[in-house]
Length: 251
Image 1 (cartoon, rainbow, N blue to C red):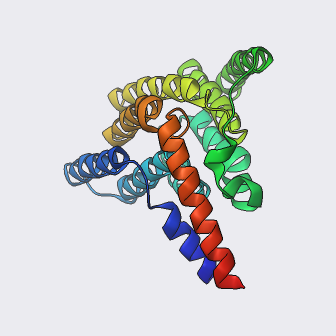
Image 2 (image 1 turned 180 degrees about the vertical axis):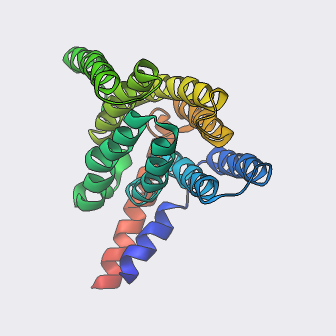
Image 3 (image 1 turned 90 degrees about the vertical axis):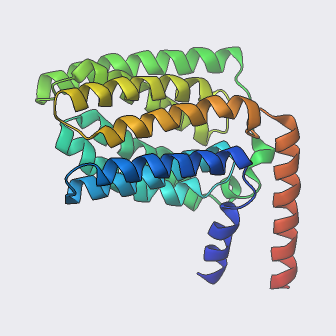
């Protein structure tokens, strides 16, 4: 347990400075949103979820595998928020993240070790599979959630779910093309939670959270190890040195 806590602490260090700036910007916005409305259990859970969620996506941006731990905690909060707003597919979205990304990351020793050195790019076949999967999930989930629940926004909910689910799978498979899907996901979630807010089904915090996610996804194309070769080399060197120090301490 001690070594695992040290590992989590290490994974929160060595990020690009812009990631830390974005986190504190997001935290400030969420604090203002929280204190500017009636404080309830739902608004507090939303605040906790959005704060941990931003840390999670920033960790992915920085190619740090602490996202598995943060993702599980934030997912619980977002599931409650999604249920309250009747955005039922956002609940399945969080469960999908936990099953396809968070738990595998937590259980996979190989994924957690120097993940930046294992980044890949799509082939033509990968593009075709990812696009087909996104469209298929959208059509099936949109029909299903509209037919069997009282979700007031089934097709908006469905497009956010389909893109986000595919992005999570692509992320776990370590393809940097995930950020094309994450940008589309951020836009779709902004639309979903803005409509939910206007219809009185959600707090503004979820729209702000989606906006921060979108900023993070755009930043990834410039500063993240997923795309920036110089930053990738720095993270690989950092993680290699950390692994070597752990090996020495256990011998």
